[in-house]
Amino acid sequence: MLRTPYPPIEPYETGMLDTGDGHSIYYERCGTPGAKPAVFLHGGPGGGISPAHRCLFDPTLYDVLLFDQRGCGRSLPHAELDANTTWHLVADIERLRELAGAEEWLVFGGSWGSTLALAYAQTHPERVSEMVLRGIYMCSKAELDWFYQFGVSQMFPDKYERLIAPIPEAERGDILKAYHRRLTSGTAEERIAAARAWSLFEGEVITLLPDPAMSAQHDEDHFALAFARLETHYFVHDCWLEPGQLLRDATKLREIPGTIVHGRYDMPCPAHYAWALHKAWPEADFHLIEGAGHAYSEPGILDQLIRATDRYAGKDAV
Image 1 (cartoon, rainbow, N blue to C red):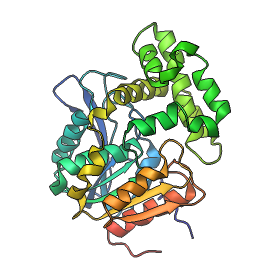
Image 2 (cartoon, rainbow, N blue to C red):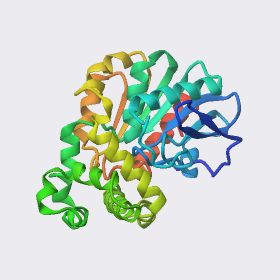
Image 3 (cartoon, rainbow, N blue to C red):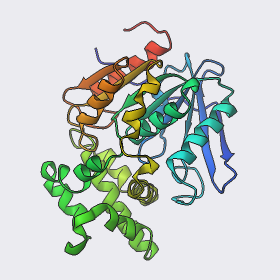
């Protein structure tokens, strides 16, 4: 029987963390104070957390900290790009760990959250008790080209046509940079229009089957602006990672128990990169889920994620 999320739960604590460089990070803590510590890293960049993310952990066994990364969700200032890099976020995770009073914690990350989780764990392996990773993303040029130039365009030609429609023919050789220009210049209305086109494309291709609720979230102005501005900002800068860095440094994870979960038909993040991480970190459990796309809500993916969090909390498999 496939596992399903735990019942909805409200945070027992919320707050804003002043990073000291112009950003204020919204965080919330859920579950049982003093139980097994964990941190949830959302996707995007710029996706933000949702109440559904709290339900990936048994609230009787976990003390989970969730937070909106710089510039998105309830963090302030909204859609801000200054002082917003991978390494600023890694430092934020450490600040939040200290705030939570945890010597080490389970790190859970999906999509861009898997990228950030790997960067954090390779920087601070002594602070990571276990890792649960979904939708592996390495932020390589090949992945970006697959998603925005040629690859997904062949699988979703109708969606891709809408993505490129606002971009003049002369600029279509680099869709990422064309959108980045529009999202960092022009009027507020022009930025919103570009953001919605960018965000909706992703929202419509991340599930194996259409998900109207996912599409609607990605088409909302406030969400889309942070999502599109932050994604293009990070991606044009290669996420401030050296080429191949996360695979190269996977040896730093060898002593960390881990679980990798990836959908066979993941469009944004081809399974090749999850397989490469599996080969570089063979000690981690690896689950390639048939009949699944990218989203954590895909039934087979969700099942393995919850089984992993249960197992790392010492809960017997059901």
